[in-house]
Amino acid sequence: MTEIIVVTSGKGGVGKTTTSASLAVGLAKRGKKVAVIDFDVGLRNLDLIMGCERRVVYDFVNVIQGECTLKQALIKDKRIDSLHVLAASQTRDKDALSKEGVERVLNELTEDGFDYVICDSPAGIEKGASLAMYFADRAIVVVNPEVSSVRDSDRILGLLASKTRRAEQGGGGVEQHLLLTRYNPERVANGDMMGIADVKDILGIEVLGVIPESPGVLTASNAGVPVILDEGSDAGQAYADAVARLCGEDRPMRFIDATKKGFLARIFGS
Amino acid sequence: MGLFDLFRSRPKNTASVAAERLRIIVMQERAANGRPDYLPMLRRELLEVIRKYVNVDPDAIDIHVTHEGEGEVLELTVALPEKHVAPPAPATGET
Image (cartoon, rainbow over all chains, first blue to last red; front, side, top):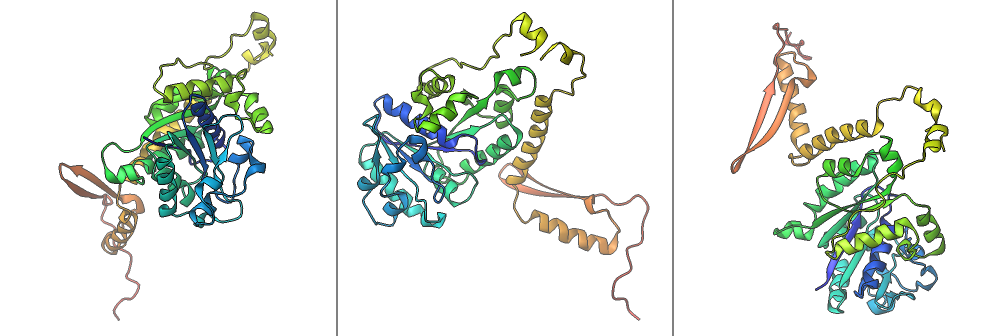
């Protein structure tokens, strides 16, 4: 059975595309057949983060409008055989997506035996974002421990609970998870940043993973290599843990405690 | 944090301020989300009608929709001013 997962947030710049890319790679590395779709029509970026920007010939809108087949538009990842990318159109506007068109593509991916389809949502709550979440079985809400991101996430959780196929059909609704990104344990320890418990308590849903603020995220995007493939980086390892939890494994949270400073560092600052 | 920071008076822990502000706004917005969207207009028009007779404050009207069993109850509270204040003169009076 195909599971459709939307990666969404409301607010921009919190790490949706970084998360979509790493989840897709992580699931594919576990042998699952995965497609990751960029819903941000007009502002595509997933191709850059995945490092396949020069191989985009056809895109999601071309498929929806019948200008090519799905097979022609799916870009096969060079690192992992079972991973496929469907880029967003860079030139059309967001009205080029339609509910029927999106449903047709998702049905075809289901028939082709994909295990997971990751829908990388655009920011905002307009058409692209609402279509990205509409058919989802699960939602990963990416949130930074910061006031505007948390408030927007709550809005998105409200939409997931009302404006999705599962919500309309009744019987369970979309399974929701939080993924905290850009988490800075030192600032949390100093009382300058909300902690995991605060965010979880305010939004009232369970936390799938915590990704620490890490220089590895920028270096990975510079190179077009999803950060989960950088096994030396804390962010990469935290994403691998989140993928394991998504697959039902029990993993303790890592990288959430401030590193203890030595006595001298505390006296003289660092 | 160095030695001298210890003597500087630190403002209130900003993370807890953020969490508190969010708890309040998120709660308000969740409550507003479930409400029918005609409520603000209903409130405005009711206020206009009431003000023809009693000079009430703009925030004197409180509207709530509560769920009771199967049905919904529209609850309307109007706080009247303590002293009876004459309503404003009608714009078009009789001559």
